[in-house]
Length: 175
View (tube, rainbow, N blue to C red):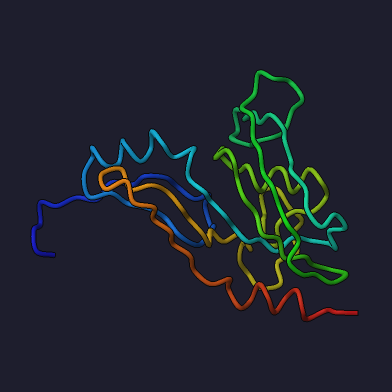
């Protein structure tokens, strides 16, 4: 507001319809430094997935490729991009599970594709999931970021609450 010539620079992105934390830099130099070390950052998400996830925690590894129509899919071929996603089940019922997710890599649609691969697509995911959408949104939320500030070398941590609707849906159908 003070200087109309000031700009902000996007450091990373979130998949379309994913809510949550995103980092902007005030200079292009800081943006580039953050991006060069982004793989060292800690990026956590929460997601509501379809079904009762039986494994309390797991690490999903696959290679991702993209079709000409921009659909990302997993392959065993090592010519795709390696994607590593870990999750921990927080709560659930017979219809839905709330997962705490950490991504080691940041590939396009990574979380959505890998959870769909194990039969637990994200609620509200029209691209990789089933059409069920009880709260009318993609239930994927970036809730925690941790990285080193590129100038001060100070650890920066940011977290925001899990959306109440995510918790409610996982409690609502308890049987």
